[in-house]
Every structure is written in C-alpha cells, then in structure tokens.
Amino acid sequence: MAYNSRKDKSLLRNFIGGIVFVIAMVLVLQLLLALFTRHNKELTVPDFTALDLQTVHRVANNLHLRVEVADSVYVKHLPLGVVFSQNPPAGSRVKKNRRIFITINSTVPRMVTVPSVIGYSLRQAAAELSSSGLTVGKLTYVSDIATNNVLRQQYKGRDIAAGKKLETESKIDLVLGLDYEENSTDVPNLKGFTYSVAASNIIENSLNVGRVRYDESVKNYADSLHAVVYTQSPDAATSVPMGRNVDIWLTVNPEKNK
Image (cartoon, rainbow, N blue to C red; front, side):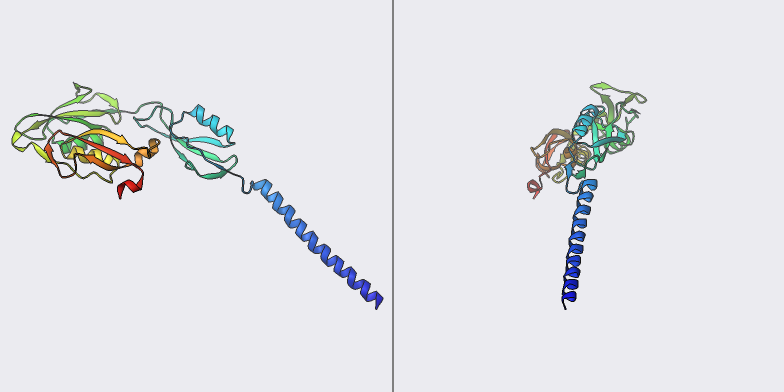
C-alpha cells in the first residue's frame, strides 16, 4: 500500500509538472510572437499630403516608417513635388517599418495644345476645352445676334490663338454673344455637389464661378476634393442676367447638408 501511495504521489507531481511546463512554454511562445510581430505595438500613419519629399522622409524616419514613391500626377493647384495621395491613408494603424506608398505631384508641368473654339456654342466650347485638358474661365457677354456663341477666346486677358501650349487645367476665358431679348438664366441648385461639378453646372447655365469658400472642416487638399456645397448665393432657381457670379460655400461636415 505504501508503495502505491508513493507511486501515486510521483505520478501527481509529474502531471502537475507537465502542466506547469506546458503553461510556461505557451507564455514563452506568446512573448516570442509579440517580439517578432510587434503585437499590439502599432503606429498611426501621419498625413503626408501636400508635404515635400524631404519633410516626408524626415517624418517617416522619426516614426520608423518607410516611404516609397509609387506614382506621379500633375495637379496645377498643388505645389510641384509635394505628396498628392498616400496608401495606407492617414490615420491607419500599421506596424513598425511598414512601407507607405505615395503619389507625388510632378515637378514638370504637363503642357497641352489650345484648340480653337471660336464659333462654337458655350456647351460645345466647354466640352472641347475639357477634352484638351483645359477649363472654361470667365464668361464675358457682349451684344450679338447669337446668344452663347463664342466670339473670342482669351488667356489672362489676351486673345490666344489655337496651337499655343499651356499648362494643363489652365483657364480659357470666353467672350460670348448675347441677344438682350434673352439675357437671363436660372441659377442651378448646387447643394451637395463637389466644386468641380458645381463649377461645371454654373458655367453650363451661362454664369460665372464667384467666391469659393471652404469652412473649417476642410483642412487639406484631399478634403477640398471631397467637400460639397452647403450654401450658395444667389439661391437656386433665381433668375439672373447671364454672366452673373455665383458664390459657393463648401464643407466635408455632413451635418451642414441635412
């Protein structure tokens, strides 16, 4: 009986020792896994948009992140060489040494050829300029028998001939005919539209884009691309003379568009 008792105690000790060993191994493995994967040690990706490459690399190095230029675009309204977009986006949680892919604004402006839109209707001229990489600037109306017929095309206050080279997205001002018996138009409803869509609607209705204001919710260029109109002046459906300015205010705050 004494022999069996000692044997039972030995088995119990071995059993308990085995459990303790397994628990210890699990803890050691979890510790090693945490060390190798940096478990629960993530970094918040900063916003690199609109920063130059030197600043981007300095910020990334301080945070133990790696930055790689993946592509380039040309956006006229951004300084040359700054970051246009990034992936992962700002605010993402990533591990140390993660690569952040960025798209920069090209340091070389893209040039396009100016077409001739004289004799076109306003709608046709806008489409032709857009397909050439240009945009409609200011509309000026003068007396003529044909309303919205393009009489002259200008750049920075001077006539510009077809074939000239300009930076993409440059604005071409149009001098248009106006029959004073049909000189009014209705202001379109712009609420909920981004700037680019709102501006196109304003031009299509023979009006000019006036003041453009962004509220405090718009903090960077990326925000401005997603911001939408929440108020306008004059109000929608108001009848005004052709060529009148329409002011717009934009936001990314959804509460302002309810």
